[in-house]
Image (cartoon, rainbow, N blue to C red; front, side, top):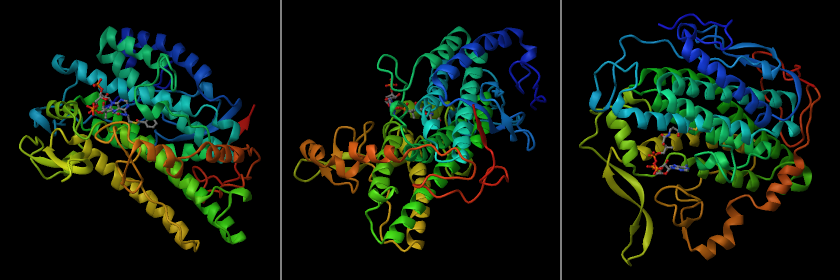
Length: 477
Ligand code: BYC
């Protein structure tokens, strides 16, 4: 069982931090460094307060308390989901054994690596989004941005807690490094590619929260299966918060598409660029970019790392307990995307059979892809209901990949292989060009009046926590 949350401590928590003075002191000495990082690398727009959801405990009542909060005073806490005392390892060679409360020595390096990679993404996204407040399309959107930011900060706390509590001096050093690497830095970048890309405008932000936060959902879903119980419980609780981030992305793109359709119909034209809306081909190019860099986040199609993680019980599959197999996969096979030789001896986009264990990144990426289809279906429904004939699509898995089987080739969004020269000539058809980005940025002017919205996006259908759209979600400084 978890203890009741202690919200009066310097670091709110439900892990009985006060019972371990050394750990408490170590985390309390990391806290000012975190706050310094937040002040220097976090949101740049000065605010008095923001209508935020704060987790004060993990139960039904506790994890979503709403109120106006001055952001630097947000109570970033450490909250793990309730412990299930009978929980057993669900897969791999330890299947059926009790889960672990401590880190087994033989898996220490691997677990630390997984936690560091997860932890590295959280502050990275805050850094990527730090300037967006200056161009928010409404107070509602501004509040959602800050909600996402403070919760990514809390997710960093979640990983830092694990590093401090279970990985000794090395863990403490890694926790420091999480504040020293920075998104896009040439000297010390963030670990994964997508987290070094810019998020310079709100269309990028919605695409990021739809596609890249959704990678978070799937990666956290596999770490929730972990035999290392504190990691599992942390991820379970993080997933609750993650749902809101994806809602921001899903409905954000909904609203962009909605507004574009309205302007297309009003003026009876597809060419809405001069009319203050975002043309559908530009939306498609942004989608192509964010989807393809997010596919890279799943690693290679085949990976011995992932096979080892699974066999050891460190990282499971998405919804492991619903899989109808032996949960060991030692004699199973899976088809994965690959470059194969065609009859003429040329490399072609194809598939190949590999051991199911080494294909686990592919298995997870496929779950993710089918989830992503849901958004495209939804956006296309808006197009259909608006009476326009264009449709959005997810590009082919080989398109614009920098990691895995297709990293060395170029392909169109339809999956047609291109030579390097053709790619150079044609990539502006598929990915946002400087002209597209400049146009989108030109639309990004802040709208900070209550109940008002920028002209390139439709208002949301619902406000936050039952409040109306014209609520005072943010008080600017
Ligand atoms: N960029 O064996 P492979 C989130 C490296 S998002 C750069 O295929 P593996 C969030 C890889 O490290 C979720 N490098 O990799 C979202 C390896 O290096 P080494 C984040 C990459 O281990 C929005 C080599 O290439 N959580 O929470 O099977 C906002 C060979 O690769 C990349 C996690 O990812 C890349 N994209 O799979 C806020 C969970 N991909 O060992 C938050 C933890 C691979 O040769 N991480 N490499 O030096 C993992 O599960 C795995 O490490 C990965 C990679 C899925 C990332």
